[in-house]
Structures are given as C-alpha cells and as structure tokens.
Image (cartoon, rainbow over all chains, first blue to last red):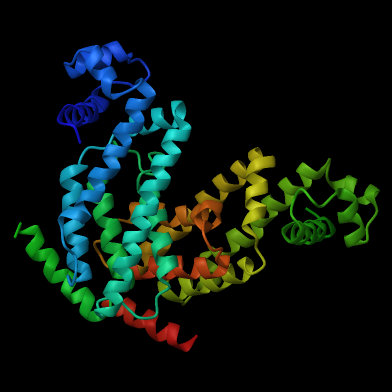
Length: 206
Length: 203
C-alpha cells in the first residue's frame, strides 16, 4: 500500500474516535488529517469511499494477525491466547457511537463490513476447533459448526451496547469471558488444565 | 380467564406455530377448532388480538411454570436446569424460526411486549438458579452473575435469530442443546461438571 494512503487510513481510524462522522466534510477531514484536500482526493473519491477503505483497512489489519503468526503445528489453545493478545493491543478502543453512526448512515457498507468480518472469524474459529480436537485439547463429540456459530453469536452479543452498556461493562473483560467460556465449553480435561497453566503465565506477562 | 377460552388459545397457538402467522386466517382457526366465528369473536377482537392473547398465556403458563421454584423443590440447581432444558427442547421440537420472523415483522408490538416479559422472567429465574448453584457448591464462586444472566437471556434471541441459521439450517432444538450445555459448562465447578456429565450419560 502507498505510504500516504496508509497514513491517511491510520489517522482516519484515530479521528473516528474523536469526531462524529455525520458532521465531517471532506475539507474538514483533510484539515484534521493534515493533508491537502487535493492529495486526499487522489486516494479517496469522497467521504463514503474513505469509510469503505477505512473499514477494509480495519479488516485487513485483523487478518494480518494470522499472516504474521505461523500457526502451523501450534497448540489450539496457544493460538487463542496469541490472537486475543494481538486483538487487545490493536483493537483496544471500541467506539459504540461510531458503530451506531455507521449502522444508521452507511447501512450497506456497515453490513458488508460486519458480514465479511464475521465470516472470516467463523472460518478461523472452525479451524481452531478442528485443530484442538485433533490435538485432544478439545472434546471429540462437538458439532464444529454449531460451536462456531455460538461463538459468533456471543461476539455479537458482547458488542451490543443495549445488552452490555459500555459505561457499565468493560469490553476487555467481556471478551476475556467469551474466550474463557469458549474453552471451558469444549476443552477436554487435559485441555482445560493446559488452559489454566497458560492463563497463569499469561497474566504474569510471560 | 375461563378454561374454554384458554383451550381456544392453546389450540390456536399450536395451529399458528404449525402453519405460520400470515398463512392462517381466522376462518381456518374456526374450522380447525370446530367452533363458530361468533364464538371466537366473543373472546378476541381480531387476529392480532388472538396472537397477543396466546402469547400472554404462554408467558403465564409455560414460562412462569418452568422458572417456578416450587416445581423443583428438593432438586439441586443443575437438576433444575436439566428439567428446564427438557421442557424447552420439547417445546422447540415443532418450532419454526420463520414464525418468530413473521412475528417480528408483522406484529412488532406484540413481539416486543412478549420478549420483554419473557426476558424479565428468565432473567429472574436464571439469577435465582445461579445463586442456588453457588450455595450448593456446584457452580464456581467467582462467576459474574449479571454477565452470565444477561448472556443467558440473550440465548432467547440468538436461538431464534434467522441470521444465526445462515448457511445450512440447523434444527432449533439441537441449537438450544448446544447453548444450554455451554451455559452449564461456563458456570459449573469440577463437582458440578462431574454431576452434569453423569446426568448427561444417563439421558
């Protein structure tokens, strides 16, 4: 990716936490990003296009976790720890009002983003369940598809501000809960023992 | 509410679940139930009213009953969950997600009222069950009752959400079983888990 475009998208992400999308014009965005409007328009057609590209950038950034780490032959539970850690570093901030705005003003773009994102996760979590089962970390009597769908439903639930208002529930905690319950639900005795040991060393920051 | 009316409601709810809300007319209901239209309209104003009334009855009879502590005296918290699971699975066997979809789409007010009442019932019942299980030493002491109870009531929607069935459709009672087992496994301690597994093997 072009370095300027990369910078634009990184900064757009930062901006999205401080400003309402609704009130922003392309001039104002260029101003906030600290680039000339003409430069910005070389890369993005308009505000809608910037949003499309920014969301794609977000999804790609999520995908690089899997490109960066070689999970071949790695224990399924270790993979969960690695991915969660990367996620909490990269996607620490979540902004429910941004989600609400996207859903309201860019419904088609938002829907595509969410569908692509969850399809990707569904695929990865299914691989994880199969891998863990082969490694005898997870039970062998599981329906991979149903467990993966349940996991997706849970992810959607913890992102739902009506169910878990952000001022009352920390997302980090909810996410940790979801992962832990996912393992609890499917682990064999050995798998669970392994998880608990890993969790201790993980909390110590090893 | 008189018994005759309750029977009409129970029977019509069965019909609507079977044939769908949109497909079934008031005439169909009368014919299937073998009653006159005059009789039916003594009790309800129109189709929406009929649907509203049997949903209310469902809350009173089925929901209140399964979360009623007196129904399960001298049972431990896990037995109660298993009891509820069995009742719900049986209820869900003939259930079609499309009916929920119709309800959401064409009778949004009724659906909302129903879900609010149901959520409140289930929330209270499941919180009570969580406290009981902790006292009995079957559930972990460190569980966050509020988070678990909220996730549990969310099952009510998740199980019915059509999107959840994207891809190959799964029987709703099977989905429920997977959710239910996940709930127990996420709260039980070692003793509770051993108890659950022994019970599961029995069944």
